[in-house]
Image (cartoon, rainbow, N blue to C red):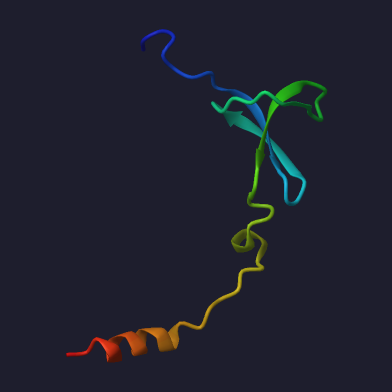
Amino acid sequence: MKADIHPNYRAVVFQDVTSDFSFLTRSTLASKETIKWEDGQEYPLVKIEISSHSHPFYTGKQKMLDTSGRVDRFRKRYQK
C-alpha cells in the first residue's frame, strides 16, 4: 500500500440526537467535537439524525401501508 493516502481509521462515538443514544465504533469520519466515553477516554463525536435505536423499521413502530388496491388500479388504468 502507498503511504499517507488512506484516511485515519480510529474509534469514534456516534450520537443519535433524536433519542440520545450513543455507540462507540471505528470510522474515518472527522469531527471537531469530542466526548468523554464510559471508559474515561475522549473520542471524536459525530451527531446523526437517525440510528437503529430510533428508526421505525428497527424499533417495530413502522406502519404498513395497504397497497393491495394500488397495483390493481395501476393495471386497470394502463391496460391495453
